[in-house]
Length: 405
Image (cartoon, rainbow, N blue to C red; front, side, top):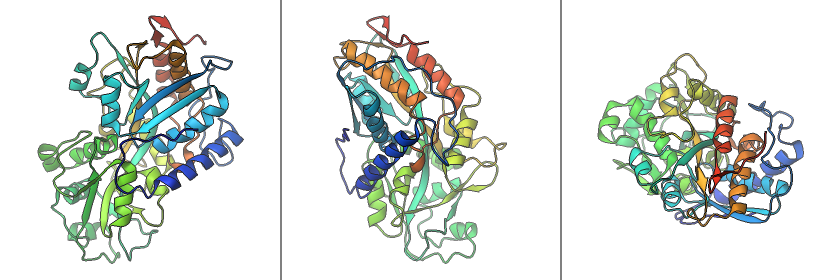
């Protein structure tokens, strides 16, 4: 088992707890099997045949990218090592921006991002290459806060517009009338709000700022959305781990946080419900995150070898008023891998290429229940089917790697 992180800084109060819960989740996953155990969410699709029925030759593969998926990725790596003990998977939790940069530079066997590539990032890819986009998981970004005197069972309500005004610096105190109007009966403090955000390129921030742009015209025109934006106010902390630590260590703070990091910091960090397009205030949980990604993907996804720059599951969810119980800031996390692997990309050998495809196939088809205890729902069946088509298309020097049915 290899928990591999580089480039992190700042307080990482949640990381040790994340690892403990990840190991527990992986152990439960292995005990109950890929189909889940008692009380588990029904998987979106039955596990499929893996690309090989036997053990793969020894290989080490290196991936890196978003911190949003890091707790689940760690669980996957542990569980996969029991299935393919000859394969060592390393994952660097360095942020989506760094993951995109390193897969572009050909220094990783697979990258990971919680945001699709922009047009300019596709242009920067090596000439003649095709980078595949493979949704491998789903999660949610929640408004996490640390307000002394407000019980953790009192989940404050937020609209997208109010969140935008907090993060733009227009709302500066917790007892502002716009927050109070959403939370009648809550004794809100007069203290100033400390805004926390990411300091590095981040798919978590991409999803959050995408939602703010949908919700508030000033934010949309003045700040916009991307993996890295010019934050109007606040303190920057690196990684979801760093944001969790900064919120926990700063009273009266608020920041966007991937839900697994909130779960692992329960007691020091609380989180609020967010209004969806149907007008309901939804507190993120496994069920409504899964409903959200199902709604966001029901019209279909771009092909794996297409450019995903104009695709936004956040926009799809935001504009959905028919699915009344969906959590609005729900998003995919994507594996990034070259369609034709070879020595040009991270010096990939044939054994490594086989391991990359096998690992990603296992993740999509057999590993989807591994993260339910920490807020990662299984992928919808239509997404799994699309992923399988994409993974079957991967070659090594032009020869297909996948040979299953």
